[in-house]
Length: 287
Image 1 (cartoon, rainbow, N blue to C red):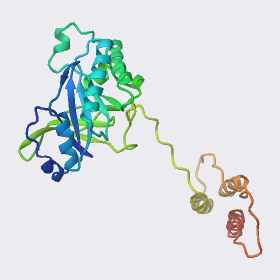
Image 2: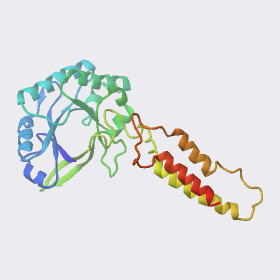
Image 3: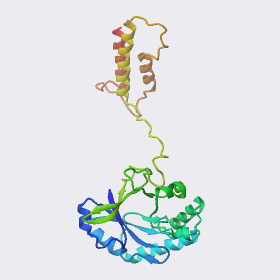
Image 4: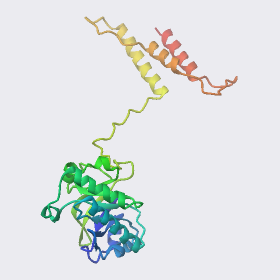
Protein backbone atom coordinates (compact mmCIF):
# COMPACT_ATOMS: atom_id res chain seq x y z
CA UNK A 1 0.00 0.00 0.00
CA UNK A 2 1.18 3.54 -0.80
CA UNK A 3 0.71 6.50 1.48
CA UNK A 4 1.80 9.93 2.65
CA UNK A 5 2.55 11.48 6.02
CA UNK A 6 1.24 15.00 6.53
CA UNK A 7 1.24 17.91 8.97
CA UNK A 8 0.20 21.54 9.05
CA UNK A 9 3.05 22.22 6.61
CA UNK A 10 1.07 20.43 3.90
CA UNK A 11 -1.47 23.10 3.01
CA UNK A 12 -4.73 22.72 1.07
CA UNK A 13 -4.29 19.02 0.46
CA UNK A 14 -6.28 17.67 -2.47
CA UNK A 15 -7.26 14.36 -0.92
CA UNK A 16 -9.30 13.25 -3.93
CA UNK A 17 -6.25 13.73 -6.14
CA UNK A 18 -4.18 11.62 -3.76
CA UNK A 19 -6.77 8.86 -3.85
CA UNK A 20 -6.96 9.01 -7.64
CA UNK A 21 -3.16 8.73 -7.80
CA UNK A 22 -3.25 5.43 -5.90
CA UNK A 23 -2.57 6.70 -2.38
CA UNK A 24 -4.19 4.38 0.15
CA UNK A 25 -3.36 5.87 3.54
CA UNK A 26 -2.23 8.96 5.43
CA UNK A 27 -0.19 9.28 8.63
CA UNK A 28 -1.22 12.59 10.21
CA UNK A 29 0.87 14.48 12.76
CA UNK A 30 -0.77 14.99 16.15
CA UNK A 31 1.85 17.48 17.31
CA UNK A 32 5.34 17.67 18.76
CA UNK A 33 6.92 17.75 22.17
CA UNK A 34 4.91 18.02 25.38
CA UNK A 35 2.55 20.86 24.52
CA UNK A 36 2.47 21.67 20.80
CA UNK A 37 -0.41 20.22 18.82
CA UNK A 38 -0.85 20.19 15.06
CA UNK A 39 -3.88 22.35 14.28
CA UNK A 40 -4.66 20.34 11.14
CA UNK A 41 -4.62 16.88 12.74
CA UNK A 42 -8.37 16.35 13.07
CA UNK A 43 -9.10 18.02 9.74
CA UNK A 44 -6.52 15.91 7.92
CA UNK A 45 -7.86 12.65 9.32
CA UNK A 46 -11.47 13.54 8.55
CA UNK A 47 -10.73 14.69 4.99
CA UNK A 48 -8.55 11.66 4.28
CA UNK A 49 -11.37 9.40 5.43
CA UNK A 50 -13.86 11.21 3.21
CA UNK A 51 -11.62 10.51 0.23
CA UNK A 52 -11.43 6.81 1.10
CA UNK A 53 -8.00 6.66 2.72
CA UNK A 54 -7.22 4.93 6.01
CA UNK A 55 -5.23 6.81 8.65
CA UNK A 56 -2.61 6.61 11.34
CA UNK A 57 -0.85 9.31 13.35
CA UNK A 58 2.65 10.35 14.36
CA UNK A 59 4.05 12.51 17.15
CA UNK A 60 7.42 14.20 16.80
CA UNK A 61 9.51 13.82 19.93
CA UNK A 62 11.66 16.40 21.68
CA UNK A 63 12.09 14.16 24.72
CA UNK A 64 15.52 14.24 26.34
CA UNK A 65 14.65 11.67 29.00
CA UNK A 66 12.13 8.86 29.55
CA UNK A 67 10.20 11.16 31.87
CA UNK A 68 9.80 13.65 29.01
CA UNK A 69 8.57 10.83 26.74
CA UNK A 70 5.85 9.89 29.24
CA UNK A 71 4.54 13.46 29.16
CA UNK A 72 4.65 13.46 25.35
CA UNK A 73 2.70 10.20 25.20
CA UNK A 74 -0.03 11.52 27.49
CA UNK A 75 -0.22 14.71 25.45
CA UNK A 76 -0.44 12.79 22.16
CA UNK A 77 -3.13 10.47 23.53
CA UNK A 78 -5.16 13.45 24.67
CA UNK A 79 -5.02 15.03 21.19
CA UNK A 80 -6.37 11.86 19.60
CA UNK A 81 -9.10 11.42 22.22
CA UNK A 82 -10.31 15.01 21.88
CA UNK A 83 -10.35 14.75 18.07
CA UNK A 84 -12.58 11.69 18.34
CA UNK A 85 -11.23 10.22 15.11
CA UNK A 86 -10.77 6.59 14.11
CA UNK A 87 -7.21 5.49 13.40
CA UNK A 88 -6.97 2.25 11.46
CA UNK A 89 -3.15 2.34 11.54
CA UNK A 90 -0.81 2.76 14.53
CA UNK A 91 0.36 5.92 16.25
CA UNK A 92 4.06 6.37 15.52
CA UNK A 93 6.63 7.82 17.93
CA UNK A 94 8.92 9.93 15.73
CA UNK A 95 12.41 9.68 17.19
CA UNK A 96 15.11 11.79 15.56
CA UNK A 97 16.88 15.13 15.70
CA UNK A 98 16.20 16.78 12.37
CA UNK A 99 16.49 20.33 13.74
CA UNK A 100 19.40 19.53 16.13
CA UNK A 101 17.30 20.39 19.20
CA UNK A 102 18.57 17.35 21.08
CA UNK A 103 22.16 18.05 20.12
CA UNK A 104 21.89 21.66 21.31
CA UNK A 105 20.42 20.57 24.65
CA UNK A 106 23.07 18.06 25.66
CA UNK A 107 21.11 14.97 24.70
CA UNK A 108 22.50 11.59 25.75
CA UNK A 109 22.74 9.77 22.43
CA UNK A 110 23.55 6.44 24.05
CA UNK A 111 21.66 3.39 22.85
CA UNK A 112 20.45 2.83 26.40
CA UNK A 113 18.90 6.30 26.76
CA UNK A 114 17.32 6.49 23.31
CA UNK A 115 15.79 3.03 23.67
CA UNK A 116 14.49 3.88 27.16
CA UNK A 117 12.81 7.01 25.78
CA UNK A 118 11.08 4.99 23.06
CA UNK A 119 9.93 2.38 25.57
CA UNK A 120 8.55 5.04 27.94
CA UNK A 121 6.40 6.50 25.14
CA UNK A 122 5.19 3.08 23.98
CA UNK A 123 4.22 2.02 27.48
CA UNK A 124 2.50 5.31 28.33
CA UNK A 125 0.35 5.64 25.22
CA UNK A 126 -1.36 2.30 25.78
CA UNK A 127 -3.97 1.06 25.01
CA UNK A 128 -3.36 2.78 21.66
CA UNK A 129 -1.34 0.70 19.22
CA UNK A 130 2.04 2.39 18.75
CA UNK A 131 5.25 1.88 16.78
CA UNK A 132 8.54 3.73 16.39
CA UNK A 133 9.59 5.87 13.42
CA UNK A 134 13.25 6.71 12.83
CA UNK A 135 15.67 7.01 9.97
CA UNK A 136 17.90 4.07 9.14
CA UNK A 137 21.01 5.43 10.90
CA UNK A 138 19.12 5.92 14.19
CA UNK A 139 17.72 2.40 13.99
CA UNK A 140 21.19 1.03 13.40
CA UNK A 141 23.13 3.16 15.90
CA UNK A 142 20.88 4.47 18.66
CA UNK A 143 17.77 2.30 19.06
CA UNK A 144 17.69 -1.27 20.28
CA UNK A 145 14.52 -1.82 18.28
CA UNK A 146 14.51 -5.60 18.76
CA UNK A 147 13.95 -5.14 22.49
CA UNK A 148 10.95 -2.83 21.99
CA UNK A 149 8.68 -5.47 20.49
CA UNK A 150 6.81 -2.95 18.35
CA UNK A 151 6.35 -2.22 14.66
CA UNK A 152 9.02 -0.12 12.99
CA UNK A 153 8.60 2.60 10.37
CA UNK A 154 11.98 3.36 8.82
CA UNK A 155 13.03 6.35 6.73
CA UNK A 156 15.53 5.81 3.94
CA UNK A 157 15.21 8.04 0.89
CA UNK A 158 16.44 5.48 -1.54
CA UNK A 159 15.34 3.13 -4.30
CA UNK A 160 15.77 0.16 -1.97
CA UNK A 161 14.61 -0.49 1.59
CA UNK A 162 17.50 -1.93 3.58
CA UNK A 163 15.56 -2.25 6.83
CA UNK A 164 12.18 -3.66 5.77
CA UNK A 165 10.09 -3.04 8.84
CA UNK A 166 6.32 -2.49 8.80
CA UNK A 167 6.51 0.72 6.78
CA UNK A 168 9.12 2.53 4.69
CA UNK A 169 9.39 6.26 4.01
CA UNK A 170 11.22 6.18 0.70
CA UNK A 171 11.17 9.84 -0.35
CA UNK A 172 10.44 13.40 0.72
CA UNK A 173 9.58 14.40 -2.84
CA UNK A 174 6.47 12.50 -3.88
CA UNK A 175 4.58 14.87 -6.19
CA UNK A 176 0.83 14.51 -6.68
CA UNK A 177 -1.26 17.20 -8.36
CA UNK A 178 1.48 19.79 -7.99
CA UNK A 179 1.86 19.10 -4.23
CA UNK A 180 4.86 17.45 -2.60
CA UNK A 181 4.69 14.86 0.16
CA UNK A 182 6.76 12.33 2.03
CA UNK A 183 6.05 9.02 0.28
CA UNK A 184 5.61 5.76 2.14
CA UNK A 185 5.01 2.09 1.53
CA UNK A 186 3.06 0.03 4.06
CA UNK A 187 3.88 -3.63 3.74
CA UNK A 188 1.07 -6.14 3.93
CA UNK A 189 1.00 -7.95 7.25
CA UNK A 190 3.21 -11.01 7.01
CA UNK A 191 4.82 -9.94 3.74
CA UNK A 192 7.62 -8.18 5.59
CA UNK A 193 8.95 -8.37 9.06
CA UNK A 194 6.80 -6.78 11.71
CA UNK A 195 6.81 -6.28 15.46
CA UNK A 196 10.41 -5.22 15.56
CA UNK A 197 11.87 -7.96 13.40
CA UNK A 198 13.61 -7.17 10.13
CA UNK A 199 14.22 -9.61 7.29
CA UNK A 200 17.91 -9.54 8.17
CA UNK A 201 17.20 -11.45 11.40
CA UNK A 202 14.22 -13.50 10.28
CA UNK A 203 14.62 -17.27 10.43
CA UNK A 204 15.32 -18.84 7.03
CA UNK A 205 12.36 -20.44 5.34
CA UNK A 206 12.16 -24.20 5.71
CA UNK A 207 12.04 -26.27 2.52
CA UNK A 208 8.61 -27.57 1.57
CA UNK A 209 8.42 -31.36 2.11
CA UNK A 210 7.95 -33.40 -1.05
CA UNK A 211 4.72 -35.32 -1.45
CA UNK A 212 4.77 -39.11 -1.64
CA UNK A 213 4.00 -38.94 -5.37
CA UNK A 214 6.91 -36.61 -5.99
CA UNK A 215 9.26 -38.87 -4.02
CA UNK A 216 8.17 -41.91 -6.01
CA UNK A 217 8.69 -40.08 -9.31
CA UNK A 218 12.18 -39.04 -8.23
CA UNK A 219 13.01 -42.58 -7.16
CA UNK A 220 11.80 -44.07 -10.45
CA UNK A 221 13.84 -41.51 -12.38
CA UNK A 222 16.90 -42.45 -10.37
CA UNK A 223 16.09 -46.13 -10.88
CA UNK A 224 16.23 -45.64 -14.66
CA UNK A 225 19.58 -43.91 -14.30
CA UNK A 226 20.84 -46.82 -12.17
CA UNK A 227 19.86 -49.29 -14.95
CA UNK A 228 21.62 -47.21 -17.59
CA UNK A 229 24.75 -46.96 -15.50
CA UNK A 230 24.69 -50.72 -14.87
CA UNK A 231 24.76 -51.39 -18.66
CA UNK A 232 27.54 -48.88 -19.31
CA UNK A 233 31.24 -49.94 -19.32
CA UNK A 234 32.81 -49.88 -15.92
CA UNK A 235 34.71 -46.71 -15.10
CA UNK A 236 37.96 -46.68 -13.17
CA UNK A 237 37.83 -45.84 -9.44
CA UNK A 238 34.05 -45.47 -9.17
CA UNK A 239 32.56 -43.51 -6.31
CA UNK A 240 30.74 -45.51 -3.60
CA UNK A 241 27.16 -46.04 -4.79
CA UNK A 242 24.32 -44.28 -3.00
CA UNK A 243 21.29 -46.16 -1.67
CA UNK A 244 19.47 -47.78 -4.61
CA UNK A 245 15.86 -47.13 -5.57
CA UNK A 246 14.56 -50.30 -3.91
CA UNK A 247 16.04 -49.29 -0.59
CA UNK A 248 14.61 -45.82 -0.91
CA UNK A 249 11.14 -47.11 -1.69
CA UNK A 250 11.31 -49.60 1.16
CA UNK A 251 12.23 -46.71 3.42
CA UNK A 252 9.09 -44.87 2.33
CA UNK A 253 7.01 -48.02 2.89
CA UNK A 254 8.30 -48.35 6.43
CA UNK A 255 7.09 -44.84 7.20
CA UNK A 256 3.59 -45.24 5.74
CA UNK A 257 0.97 -45.87 8.41
CA UNK A 258 -2.76 -46.43 7.85
CA UNK A 259 -4.92 -43.45 8.73
CA UNK A 260 -6.70 -43.74 12.05
CA UNK A 261 -10.08 -45.38 11.68
CA UNK A 262 -9.51 -46.35 8.05
CA UNK A 263 -11.06 -49.61 6.85
CA UNK A 264 -10.55 -51.46 3.58
CA UNK A 265 -13.64 -52.52 1.64
CA UNK A 266 -13.77 -54.91 -1.29
CA UNK A 267 -14.05 -52.15 -3.87
CA UNK A 268 -11.55 -49.77 -2.21
CA UNK A 269 -8.79 -48.32 -4.31
CA UNK A 270 -5.27 -49.74 -3.78
CA UNK A 271 -3.49 -48.04 -0.92
CA UNK A 272 -0.33 -45.97 -1.38
CA UNK A 273 1.59 -48.90 0.08
CA UNK A 274 0.09 -51.36 -2.46
CA UNK A 275 0.84 -49.00 -5.34
CA UNK A 276 4.47 -48.64 -4.29
CA UNK A 277 4.85 -52.40 -3.91
CA UNK A 278 3.49 -52.89 -7.46
CA UNK A 279 5.90 -50.25 -8.78
CA UNK A 280 8.78 -51.98 -7.04
CA UNK A 281 7.77 -55.41 -8.36
CA UNK A 282 7.48 -54.10 -11.94
CA UNK A 283 10.84 -52.37 -11.67
CA UNK A 284 12.46 -55.65 -10.58
CA UNK A 285 10.80 -57.65 -13.39
CA UNK A 286 12.28 -55.31 -16.00
CA UNK A 287 15.84 -56.18 -14.97
